[in-house]
Image (cartoon, rainbow, N blue to C red; front, side):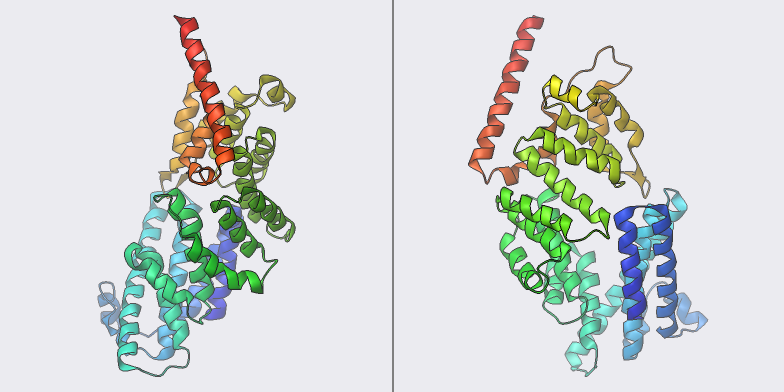
Amino acid sequence: MYHALGYSTIVVLQAVMTFEQQDIQKGISAMKDALQTCQKYRKKCTVVESFSSLLSRGSLEQLSEEEMHAEICYAECLLQKAALTFVQDENMINFIKGGLKIRTSYQIYKECLSILHVIQKNKLEQEFFYEFEGGVKLGTGAFNLELGLLQLREGASGRSMRSSLCCLTILAFHTYISLILGTGEVNVGEAESLLAPFLQQFPNGSLMLFYHARIELLKGNIEEAQEIFRKCISVQEEWKQFHHLCYWELMWIYVFQQNWMQAYYYSDLLCKESKWSKATYVFLKAAILSMLPEEDVVATNENVVTLFRQVDGLKQRIAGKSLPTEKFAVRKARRYSPSLPDPVKLVLPALEMMYVWNGFSIVGKRKDISENLLVTVEMAEAALQNQSKCEE
């Protein structure tokens, strides 16, 4: 069951990276196979027990060790299959199917956590207990915001095969989630200590290099981060989608430095190669070009107004919902709508997007870069004031 879970997880990761329908279908197929494998080892229930298990699987405490592992692997497979179900199609049926899978997975994780407490209390001896414990920590940590970090930290400190996944989940929380969706305060110290052993063991691992670069960026070491992101791109060619993460980061680094032509280069690469959010990429490319003098824009053979007008047609829906960043981009791009007699130009749109992505919390660690950005803002403010006077 662990081989089935491991293989299907890799296939699902490939699907998430590419967003190709073909890869998504492969991921769903692999997860179906993994679920069937896990099902073979799960406790067999009578019809009455199966019906009652819809409400509660209270009989889980009587599971054998093999059946316990089957439950935790089954829950993990369900959760991943639900994620693919959401992105497979926008229709309401898939949305409901995905929701039911998540609910079932959550219920199993809750019961497995209860089993874990019973085992620990009674000090029962099990050969592969640490693997079951690692699965519980990963699942409950991912589901619960309040207890999540504690569970993930405990999981990361263990020796199960999921310890590295717990560690990487915490790293993602510290280097992205807490910065973009939280207060902007990042626990860089914990992120560095978690990454250190992986970086030592896999010095040329692309994932390790990526987090290393991200941590350096959060510390304000922008030039060091730049070099590490480039190295991250060079160490592997198998997953081009991983390059796109680096392109995204390099684009923002050049925005911070106000090297608009280089920022445009990476935004253009994202537009051409990545399928994650075309509307966001095109809006960012247009926003970056808006920061350049007109003659430089002409040299790129791009038309800023045309790009802004493409944004609305590129928005997508996942699980029936629009992406917040795409909604923001679409609303801003309406200033360039063909229905308006003249476009109402956005003011410093690249810096506005930098604010949306909490980039100023990074820039704030560098006085030189902050002062250069302030000069740009002041110049734009002066130009607006002069324009207002002319209109009067």
